[in-house]
Length: 550
Image 1 (tube, rainbow, N blue to C red):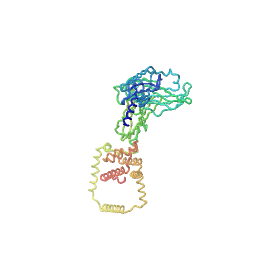
Image 2 (image 1 turned 30 degrees about the horizontal axis):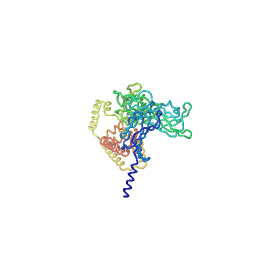
Image 3 (image 1 turned 180 degrees about the vertical axis):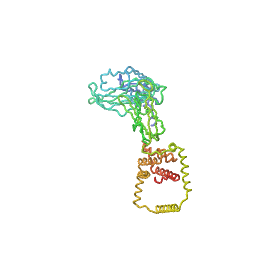
Image 4 (image 1 turned 60 degrees about the vertical axis):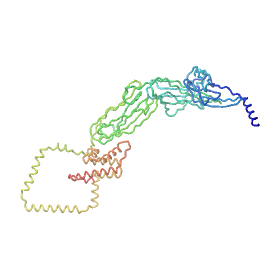
C-alpha cells in the first residue's frame, strides 16, 4: 500500500510539468560589422536534434567561416523541462555591402534568415588608422610555375598584446613562407607603427583569371588600462596566370632573365697532358626556385677524362624578385696530345617579359693539349724506317759479310795463336775476380747514391712507403716516360691489366677530382712492380735488361 501511494504521488508531480516547444533560431553578436572583422554566429535548437548539425555550405559561399563548436544542455525551470543544442562559429566578411545569412534546417526545424550590414573601413570612426595591412605582388602576368614574391606588411599603431595574421590562400597555388617574419618600427604620416613583414613565395599551378584575397588580422591592443579588439584585412589582388606554350623545348623555365657563364682554371688554351682543368658553370635565373633550375648536360670529349661534381643551389629575394643560382664544377683531365673542341652549351628558357623562347649559352672553345716536354719520347718503328733507307742497309750487309771471309782465308802464325790464347785466359781470370770479389761498404754506398740519383724506381718505392700520392704519380710518370710511353694511361693500357688501369685512374681522380676519390697506394704499387718485372723479363729475352729499375 505504501509503495502504491508513493507511486501515485510521483505521477501526480510529473503531471504538473510541461515541455517547452521545439524551435531553431540564428543570431549574430554584432550588426553592422566592419570589412575583415570577425563576428560570432550562433544557431540554437530547442528539443531533440538526434545528432544533426546545420549545413553551412551556402554560408561559406558568401563569408569566411571558421570551425564550428557544439554544446548541449538540459534544464528544469518552474516545472518545465527544456533541452537545447547550440552551434557557434566565427564568420568574416571580406567585402562591404548588405548580405543575407541564409536560413538553417535541423531535424525538421528551420531558422529565419539574417540581414547583415558590412561597413567599409574608410567609413569607420578612424580605428583603421590604428591597424592596417598592405600587400604587394610583382607587376605583370605570371606563367604557370613561375615564382613570384607576395609581401604582407601589418602596421599596428598601439601596443599589441596578441593577434593572428592569416596566410594568403588561392586555389591551385602554392604559398611558401620565406624565412622568418621581420619585426621593426616605421614612421607613417608622422605616426610610429610596429610593423610585421612576411614574404611568401607564390607559384600558380593552373592558368586562368584569379583573385588573391588579402590576409586578415585580428588581435588585441592596450589602450590605457583596457584591452581593445582590433582587426584589419589586406586588399585583394587580381592575378592573370598564362599557360605553358605548347612548343617550348626542354624543361619549363619561365623567367625575366637567365644567364649562363663559365670559368676555367687554368685560363690558358694550351695545356700539357695530365694537367687537370676545372670548368665551372654558373646558371642564374630570376622568377624561379632553385629546384626549377635544370641540370646542364655536358657531353663526353674523346681524349679527356671527365669528373663532374655535385651542383650547389641557392636562392634569395631581392627588390621583390626571387633570384636562384646553380653552380656546377667539372674536372677535365687530358689524356693525349692534340687540338680538341668543347661544344657549345645551351639552356632553353622562356622570357616572360617578351613572351618568347630564348637560350642562355656559352660558346664552343678549342683547347690544345701538348705532350709533357720533360718526358723523353721514344721513337716508334715507322720513324726508324723513314730515317734509314732500305737500299743503304742492303748494300752494307754484303760488305760486312765479306770482311770476315777474307780474314778466315788468311793463315795465322804461332804469335797470333799465342795472343789469342792469352786473351782468353785473361778474360777468364777477370770474370772470376768479379764473381768472387765482395763489394766494400764504401762502394755499396756510392752505388746506392748513384742509383738514387738516376733511378726513378727508388723514388717510386720511397713515395709508396710514405703514402705520398702526388710524389708517387710524378715518379710513375717519369718511369713510364723512360720506358717509351707517351702518357701514363697509354702505358697502363699496354699492360693488359684491368686492375692496374683501374687503380691508375683512381690515382688521377684522387689528385684532380673533387669527388673525394681514394686510392690504395699499396695495391697500386704491387700492380706497378708486377708489370715492370714482367716488362723486364721480356727485355732480358730480347737482350735489353731492365734490372737497374729495381
